[in-house]
Length: 333
Image (cartoon, rainbow, N blue to C red):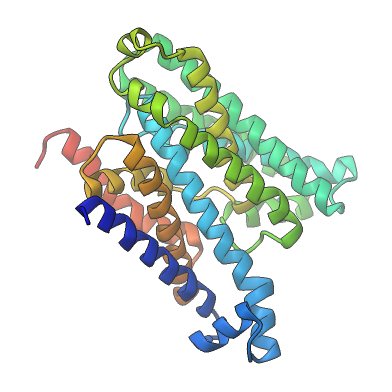
């Protein structure tokens, strides 16, 4: 067994272990036997079965899908922009999704659709997709004219800050009920996805992940530069559109249903590169998905144990990786 195969096997085992641990962790700790009984229909206390199947299973599945989605979208953006600090959160894509959600949530009461659960979920997702797409298109347009990756990064961050100011203005002008709903959403949570919402969340994220897998060959060619990629027969425009669609589906959907979760999309691709010592997306894409899912499950376990918001935990884990990337790229150590 090669080192790379062994690493993938260990990642699968780690992911399964963290998924099981997430099901057992919470305000009411459950024994592994109870969790297994609840999942398989074996002997289990009815209350424990209800907790596992109706609450924790949905939350763990959300963490798994969201972690894989954010990591895959981050890897795509870092390759597309040839920028090691690119990511849905840093380049303002998550901010664009947040603006779309803010416009919907703060305007839903005026439209009379705040009480319709499915329409509300679909509206939030659609608003997030549109907001994320608009920001990503704007950043890509700037990227075609400006070749300096540092300038693109700064412009993306400024765009995100500007969108944040607009969101704050919307909050100031909104009524109390809508404001409370939006503020709770901004804290980020993996536990707010209900079973009907999962029926929309899961297929869209899976579709985005499949597009990421289809994009592996174009991503590898883009590493060599657009000029060489064209000589190899790559349709640059079509590839960009596919990557745009995948990123919007992944980052936009996760932001819509879970709130803005930072650092996973930025940090995980670097961890995958460091662990596998490879730039090949045939390795990096599945590795990033597995690491992203495992890391967000770990963050959820830590958040439940410490009673912290999940965003706080992802920041504490992600910031050291970002600092390491900056120092490494500036050859400071």
